Length: 264
Image (cartoon, rainbow, N blue to C red; front, side, top):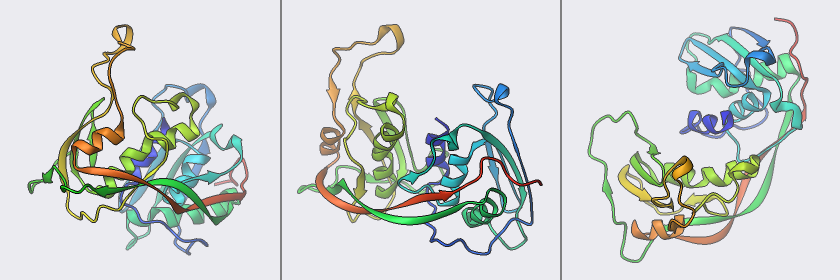
């Protein structure tokens, strides 16, 4: 679940290039979190502004993904998820929070001996395009929205001020989760491959997206016979369609990393 949170944290950040830049924290401390307080303790937190970075309950997997701007995939030792850490750092004057990944790359290289490289993989995806009759939703009205860029809800999601790139990432989340967490496999209505935006639509939009086991209920009241609306069918109601193609993704391969950091 912590990995799922990271995808939202990294939304809107461009992909960084390897090798890391010379950007670095002015000062930083890191320490392992005792395992006895990690599970279900609420020890996960993330607060970053243009002056400080404070994080807790972050595994090395989390930190490496943040450092490389949430790559499509991370080839890494299995144990990177076993231990969590607290990280507190001061961001140098004139450096913004948007440059956090570059500073994290430098930090992980210095304190954990991280060595990593990019590789390209060709992966089957769906291209999301506009159907013949055009989109059946309108641009978002101007104004701030606390839920901008998100689709919240269960099978009936309210998508608010989302770009089509945002929406493609949201549609891809179940696929990425299923690849890393077996419990998320076979989610009702989920797609079997990632989605990339090829609509050509450049504005922000607000609409309802209904997919999954519609009207199934929750907990003991769940109805296993409830209708399943696939994401592909739900997209048709929005005037969008999916076309299977192949796409090249950048992935990160961890060549070396230490289990524990050098002293603060």
